[in-house]
Every structure is written in C-alpha cells, then in structure tokens.
Image (cartoon, rainbow, N blue to C red):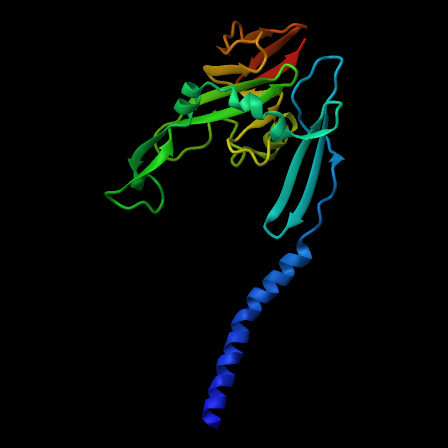
Length: 243
C-alpha cells in the first residue's frame, strides 16, 4: 500500500508543478489587466466636417497582457457614437461588383512563402486596398486600389507599409489617418489617402455619385452643396481638405 501512496503523491506533485506556470501566467494576466478607462477625448485624426461643425475624437481603452484594446467614438454634437457604427451605412454603400473585385484572391505556389511545401498552393489577395473615410456630413469614403505582384511584398503603395517605414514617416501617417477598430473590413479615417491610379469615391449623399477620382495637375475636386472636397497629390500621398 505504501508504494501506491508514494506513487500517487509523486503524480499529484507532478500535476501541481505542471500547473504552476499556467497559474502564474493567469495571475500575471489578471494583475496586468486594467478596467476600461472611460470615454474621454484624445487628439488624433478624424474625417472632415462642414466648416461650422466640429467633431470630437473620443476613446475608451483598457490594457491586458495581450495588448491594448481600444474603442473609438466620434461626437458630432449629439453624444459619442462608435466610429464603426457611424460609418456602417457608408461601408454598405460600396458597390457589390467593386467589393467583390478588390477583395478577390488568387491561387499561387506555396513555395513563394516561407514554409510552403513543393507541389502545393495557397491563396493571396490580388489587391492591396485602402478604405479611408474622409468626410462626415456628407459621408464620403475613398477606396484606393493597388494590384499586388505575385508573392510576398510590402504593402502598397511605397511609403504606406507601417511596419517598414521609418519612425518619422510612421508618426506622420498616424497624425493624419488611423484605423477604425473592430471593423469587419479594414477601414481607416482621416485626411490622407494613398495615391493610386484607381481611386473610387463612395458616398451616402445622393448629390455625390459613385465615381473615380480624376486628377489634373495633381489635383481633383468633389463639389458639395456647400464648398468642395479638394484632393492634392504629393507623391504617394493625397491630402484632402474642404473648402
């Protein structure tokens, strides 16, 4: 009987020892996790609004061991609204044919990618696509489309791959445009759009038709009921303003 008790004790000890790292991890995660900060104003890029209007950028954030979780709100004068909910109708206005094309995938040899096996294939996107909400009231979205070369590459266009640009460029981009969190289809907001020969304008305003941007001498305009949206190209950046 004594050997059996000894074996049982050893097994229990091993089980406890193997569980300790996970227990320590859970305790550390719990201690690191913070409560939601509460909705508060934080400077950052926002879409354009009419000259007599204003928009506040608000966030609610918390920290956990896996990173920071952020909720982004906009207040246009009627209280905070989740940015994703605010532009949901605008995203849904994207024509189906355009959506299907720019989200299409292609079959390529797996060996183009690290760890790929000979004789097998994988899927990759045909396009790098940027969706940027540039204006509210009227709600306007610009889609910048870039056909990808086959195989791995930096995000197009040049200077817009956040992982590879230098700190100064990354800071500049974050000052002008930022991603909208928790969106099913990656969407950004701000006053800077990546340049492309294929740029589409989508709006929920009936006076702004679905159209491609046409630049003349590096400028393009979209007429509004009051003023216009002005697009100025500078290399691979398009600066957007309202006049």
